[in-house]
Length: 316
Image 1: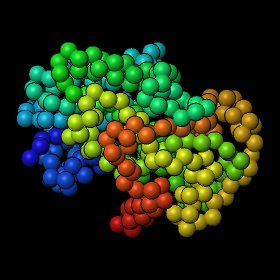
Image 2: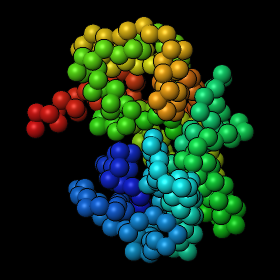
Image 3: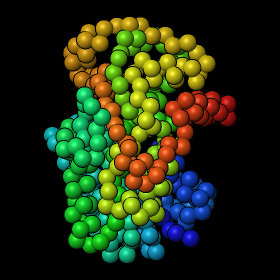
């Protein structure tokens, strides 16, 4: 039985990956910082994720590490140098884990990066061969981590797989998608009835499917992959599809996008406005052509599963 270490295993993606690995018969070790229980997995608590973290207890006999833990987006970052914290965790912490993995004979490391490495928006779909254009401390730190891992792979023979997902949605999603579902469910009028952007998203089930595809696939070695559902939608369309899954009619008000962007600048919400109104499309044909991967679910299916999970939580 192949032994897999999953970091950030109590997070949105890490937990889903761990559960699917267990279902598929893998021996799963979950590395977490807070108390966590998952049937069928071994749980190891780590003190943090930086250059001082000792991973020796977690790496014995491990063949593959799925590194899903990271310092993520913080809309209102405080402090004199926000980048330092991102660098400490996402760059130094990642390299420390990878170096210790090499010493323990780990064969492969799958790094969950971000589409932000490519950029924040585009006029044509991003591909793996595009010149990176990370904006902001989170994306910059992810790109630097990619570079460190690529260099280590060349030096050591560690097989590195880099995955850059866009917004991940699915059951119990945190962040923007979770807020959107809550607003639609509550029947709150939303001023997004005239947004004609196009954004690539990835269903949690599809990202989990692809991550596990990369655990063994020989052609995934030392490759970068951009992954998405292949069903690009506008913000207006996403709200409409979410409302359909909820069995509700969306309350969309057609406020001009230019006016909303101006208002967002006035209140310091430009990053949020870019996510709501900007276009960001991904070409994931490499994953399909090179690995033979196909999305496990459609957007409609994952949205319905998200709604059902939310309703089940409320009735428990």
